[in-house]
Image (cartoon, rainbow, N blue to C red; front, side, top):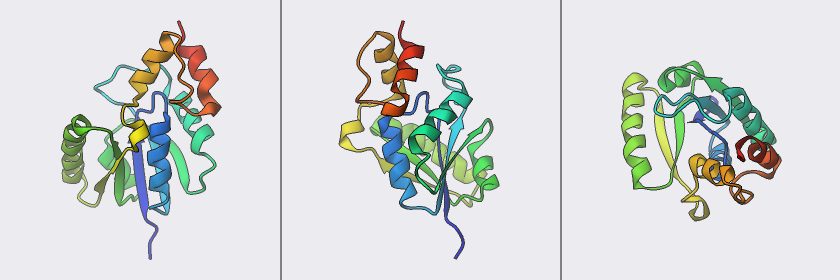
Length: 162
């Protein structure tokens, strides 16, 4: 039987406990997960460089044996083909996420018929959590310790606190 590989894409600016929940659950379902920092054309350049985001992800999920981390600036469907992935894993928080992600899933399927998109619903404690919210709270000096991994908390605060 061939290795089942999946891609877990996102901007991860920065990675949150919600992201880690999705990555951990996906890692239990597949032989290999590639967490890939993608450039989102709909978002600004970000608070952290792609290399910083990759380092954050490695610090927080690097202990999971079947997870690797990468950076890619291109079409996700092409990346999935390069990695010989059978699935793209996306986390969903609310119906508003679904509409956008459903459209992306259909587009990726058209561009790469070999890949399926799998939606994992977020755990209830992370339903409201987003990188944007973390950045806003941190920039105003709020406590983000229950939103981001302890391993990267101080680095995030140092960058974002005004």
